[in-house]
Length: 314
Image (tube, rainbow, N blue to C red; front, side):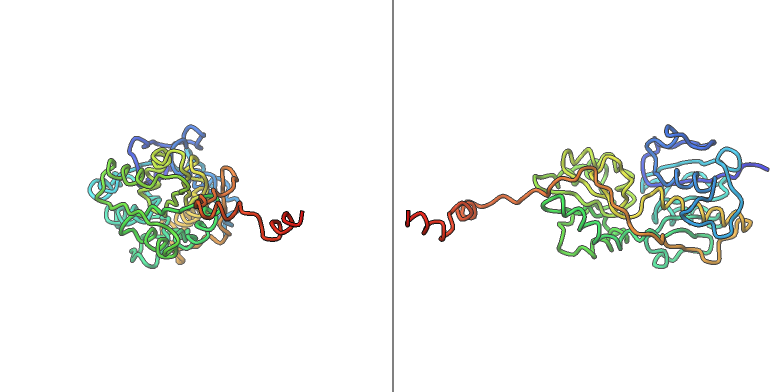
């Protein structure tokens, strides 16, 4: 029986493209999204989470299937989607990718990670997992706010998960918008414009930002960045939400169910991650204190009235 082919697609840089035709090593996974580690490990043994729910067939990468891992820019997804002709299933690591995959291969089973699947109007061949990234926005802000002064929020204009997350935060943050029309140089300029003392950058959930994750942590220098995925990027100060590896495990359950159903989409196409969000902080340091004004400083140093009276009695 020929190996099944999973076409795994994310927003990012095509330099990270690769074929994975064995159980992946750390070298195979280096630089790519942790979803792939979750996918391959869960398919191999169905270990909880999530529970297998009656699925009994294990699938080992390199034996029953192989992965064609591809990253593309937003423009490339729209105009030059990776070749789908040999794909048995398309594994989509964002909402944008899922829509592009559906346009490119409308009759191929698609498993996607999507924040709000029922708000996206997908067709009958799309299923997957909701990580509810926009709905953990307030929790992410509260955790990050403990460690920085002013919080700036990097926002992808017109992208629903980012827009909804920004809405939850309202005036608690200073939003910094990145239009899709911005090229990489303009994107870098926008990010570097947020850098300042006593600031932190909360990166709202957007696939373009994940695709530029390492660069964003470099552009911000020593300023702390905080993400909605605690395991990615590893260079960030921290993150809060559902790890990409965990999401990959839940997506793997959808893949296995499709294969067990002769490539049919499950009757319950979308599942939620039924676990609590997790937090990762690289170092627990006190939140920087705002500078005191000259008046406040003088007031703070002035002796209390009772102390002054005691001194006069002496």
